[in-house]
Length: 411
Image 1 (cartoon, one colour):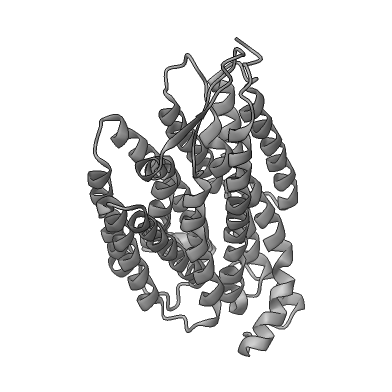
Image 2 (spheres, rainbow, N blue to C red):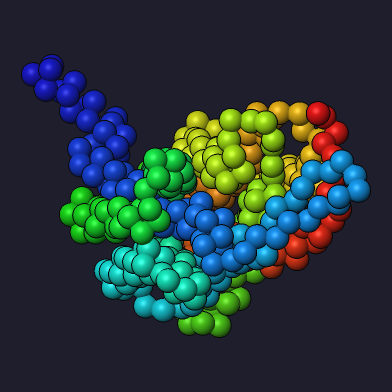
């Protein structure tokens, strides 16, 4: 009798996670969904240098009268791929919050666009087809993020952190897979065909592993804002648009972090060149992408251990990284590639930390009835920052390519 009473008391004191024996299904499903949703996006950015090189000539700038470092630049920077990989997704994110939330239709559309993207890039014979594939991948990622991330509000709060961890995992696995397959001389077509396993995995995660959301919301953590604010759902476009201004405190810091971050990745990474090292120029770009994604994965998976509220500080730190890389690609003063790898890892930690902490804050500060809309709007901020960085990256890239090449400050 005492044992039964103790068991009942233990059950009453148990957390929602302990009571829900099937919670693992949702957490695993959202991790896989985050992985699959961002995987194509990451692969396209990792392949950006190679996609451009397939259809473009390389220019060389040199000064025969001086001992200089020869600059080798693609005529079009990887910022062009960045724009093709961001603008369609950004447009999709702008529209999605105001459309009916038909989650099954949205996920099916995202999967179809992802498949089309891999096939177009893999079988492209001309640049426009390759760019069309990147556009399809971008739209798939934007549709998935603006649908599945808000959908986490119907589940246990930790679903948001596992989604974020999965998107970070996509960075590491995507960049590492592309760099590794290139290293063993797998053709670009075969690489893209191999990547088709991820849209299939996304279908399995969403329609088989993930449970239906009814009754699964974790209400053990009350919404802070709902205590002092009317928690009624937003009605109509006018009310939704008026509500967006209250989300600027989440959106603006995230925008600046990603603006600085992707200006580095797609405007300056391509120009980083360390001679007399174990990696050639193309491999340096690929492995810097891998290194960056490792940092993103670590920070996007850390929100249950480290929570950070003041995202604007992360944007200032990211600006310092811009200053370093901008001066490095002009003067080549860093003595070792390992220093660059360390700074790139730090850059990834800042970006991933800004992403996961922004949405984790929203899960407790935004009324639950408004979270789907609020999160769907806020995800536009990182895409807008990335898009603006792409527009800036191309002229800056071309301006640096036209500069007289300089000797390294360290020989």
